[in-house]
Image 1 (tube, one colour):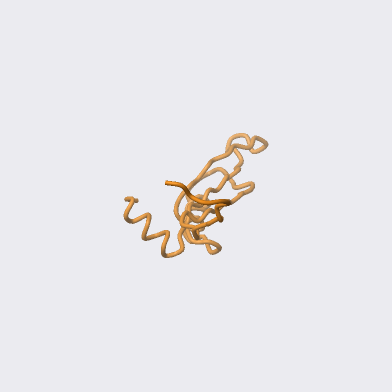
Image 2 (tube, one colour; image 1 turned 90 degrees about the vertical axis):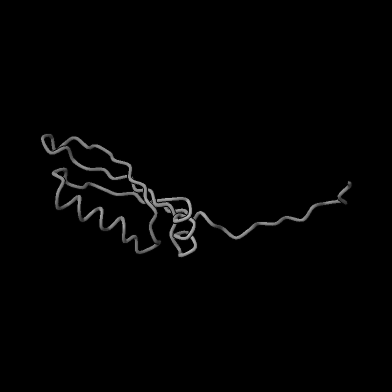
Length: 89
């Protein structure tokens, strides 16, 4: 994604989504492995993450154990705080 595309995506409601995916190692189902995934996605539907997880379940042998998702919009309203005293030149 180019910087210009990323800014447009953020304006349309996208933000950076991070998913920690814990899955079972196919040859040793008692062993858990983790995988970190990041992509721009829309909260709370997460269509991109859902598409990736569907791909995982269809094509990857390691069964999913758990998924933890974090999402942060990258464009926020501006926060202003008043200055005490006067500004000097």
